[in-house]
Image (cartoon, rainbow, N blue to C red; front, side):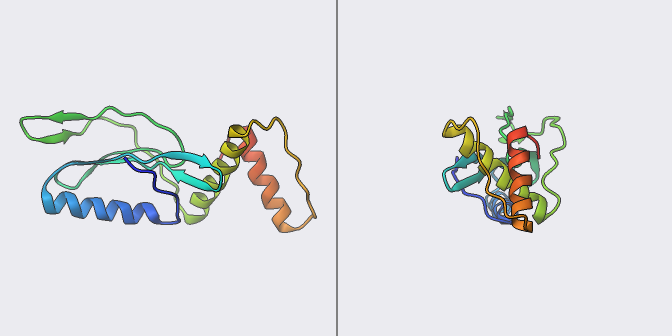
Length: 142
């Protein structure tokens, strides 16, 4: 279990590290990461399950809560691949960053109990971006 904060491309590093460990020690690994925004921290989730051969048998969605049941085969001493839906991770760094920002704003507003927000807009591109993030966060979309 982990509370590893979000950073761009961090999931690729995590997965490479876990794949190396499963191959080296021939053991399955279940990595469960926190998801959500907490003050100035964002946790991306992205929990992942590797079997002892180093293959990913489950990958949780990024920036969303999820639940999965994984079975352990005691005879093979390995995790069993179950038919999970194909998880679509963010395709680009821009999409990944966007999802992190929307989640951070959405959780911040929710956890502090705000019923409304006020945006100060100057008309520049940064104001347009803030408006788009806030709109996505409050509508619950991506």
